[in-house]
Image 1 (cartoon, rainbow, N blue to C red):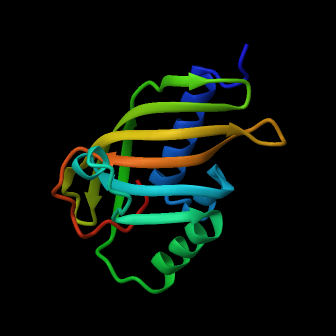
Image 2 (cartoon, rainbow, N blue to C red):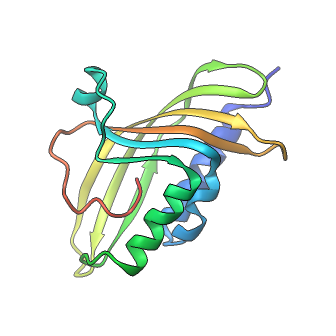
Length: 157
């Protein structure tokens, strides 16, 4: 029996979303293994096999740099997210690695209180069990349903 269960995957996704939604972004890279992939793309690009995305990082250090830049260099309108994450569907699973697909909706709340659907899509994940027995993302490909992505994509999805 695998150590990667739907219950553990749901808990991982809940903690991941809570970290982002509560603006604890300095901890966000900790959900990934050191050598990882974080990519935000559109469904059309993903279906066409295009490797480029709106956001691309292939190490935890790149994820950390993204947060530092967001905090110290980027200028953007104050906002926050609220994630609604569906139940993870385990596509493949062995004892230490699982391929998982999980639907999501991200609401964006602006400083003035305006709330809108910012992104919908699915997470295509490869999740591993690390040396401490914790689940980490080896890969998180964020496939957005819409090709119309707001240029204000600052906060991680």
